[in-house]
Image (cartoon, rainbow, N blue to C red; front, side, top):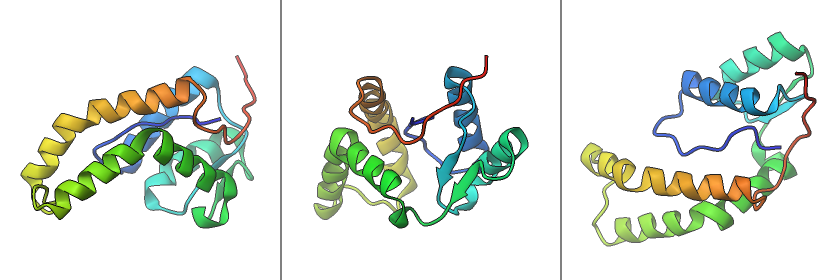
Length: 138
């Protein structure tokens, strides 16, 4: 099961933990979580180890994990591909400069909520593949 999927304007550990714990509140604590080894996942790892113990956090390169790669493919095809192609086009045409903070702010302002709606719709209607079964404790 996908615990959370959000369009965020940062990749900080505190932000990811906050969104992850919202997913936990909705669905329960998963048996295991799969992530890459990025430092943005360290607080989720701490949470899982504290609440589920050793073996509850599976880390590694996502390119070696078929479930993660399949999920990203589904997310891209079902929700985000349009935006990726649009932004690449704008960049190629010189209308978007990803090094310009004003351009990035405008991008977030205009497209963040739209992309979130697409992601929520995909998760709600099952167009994104489930990744891990949950054990519910209520």
